[in-house]
Length: 445
Image (cartoon, rainbow, N blue to C red):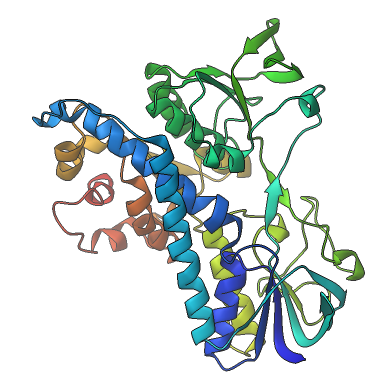
């Protein structure tokens, strides 16, 4: 069986590439060992946002009196919340399968094994391809902490399936995943402790000032944050031993969630049979067209080790397929949005103050309270927020960061301004509807 394009991995990069290539007339085979949609759809982006929306709805009900609405007694049903999450996932998986079938893609359920750059085996079948695209994603990284192997800890996957709430939860790792689960369980009344080795949560990409504002907000809601704290051992029970600059100590919790990050999946599908250049992050080196050092082999998504985000993977997949089709295209990482779907949300795109300072780039920061947006005031009683724009010496927009809901929805406006290298004057000419929270960018300009 010969195909013009073979794809390993049916996550956002894989299914986007398959649909794009199939619609363009290429013969495509897509291998997926679990479920279409990958980690993002089945145990990541979509299920966590479904749970978080239930928690947000519960928060709104509990605080409805701020909006002159009386809710006699707000309550929630965790098993039903989990069931709704599963229903949402099933619906979207079926949608992806339908789109791929319509595009003429051959879907193979099973573990693909790379023989060489043009040959793949799966079960007892063999497949030949002109081009090979690897979209194998990433996996949870579990650090070698003494005693951890003896403890029944959660990963994000386990936390998504739990139908019972622990009285207390310790989360090791204050990144995006850790903070989103901290938000969810805090809203449902769980005593949450976040242990982070770095001096601030959301390290490695989010604006430090915005991260600090989010931490302060959740500290007021009862979450305990332990920053610059290294976990040294874990005992059954669960007792977490740690060290700080002030000395050693321990935290006891009913449940433990390990959330220290993710790493590219490099084993289990014959990657070692391809002699490709690796990078310092442990991923595969690609150029702006997502080509590897091996002709005819492309890599998209988390396997590059660069931007472990679904929306980055989707755009990379389009670039790879366009390159295979002979269309001129190139991947740009100028304006990759990052979002934390807590309540309130944080979103950022482009450079941060920290990245600009590290690069020695001159800039000016413009900050404005979200209260300058009438829509924000109307929908966020007693809640503060902030919008920050980072502007270059030539007046182009370098970065934008928002603390306040719905930051996730409006950040794309700033992303387009950054990607298109708009100056402040050019951006100001674009009409934004009133009243919307997105008007905050115009106010800042």
